[in-house]
Length: 190
Image (cartoon, rainbow, N blue to C red; front, top):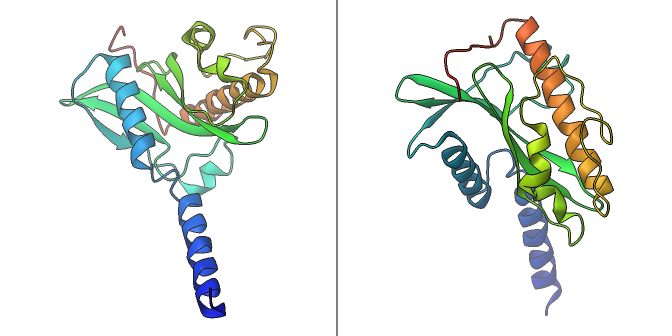
């Protein structure tokens, strides 16, 4: 291979890596499909639309979790709000995994789901048997791995990371409530 072709190949590889790194949270099609399926299954609907929650940059500085690039949105069917969802990523042993937290209109967790997990070990965190432990927690609750969220043998890093990420999202939503960006509602009993 000529020197020019090697440089071109290397440049294309770097461009590909850079563009792949910037895909999230402008969701990849695979991730977007998983998000859509999770919402449809959780809210038991065939069609929905999402409405991004706009959070001023100054307020984002006060939140622990990231709230940029449409990671937090309202889920609508017709003109009715079904709830909210947050899409984030958390660390596993060597890589990151993507997850979604879905909330009822009162902002209690309706369901949590691991969307894409890239490790060979620790996959137990994707089990609904474990993830159901997050259901019902609200922005005023404290989450502690090993106390009110069960520890998982063989998935300590990922399970702890998921717990901490969920706790950070709940604390951040509390900041949004306090600053009147969103208001909990009890209009639906989902």
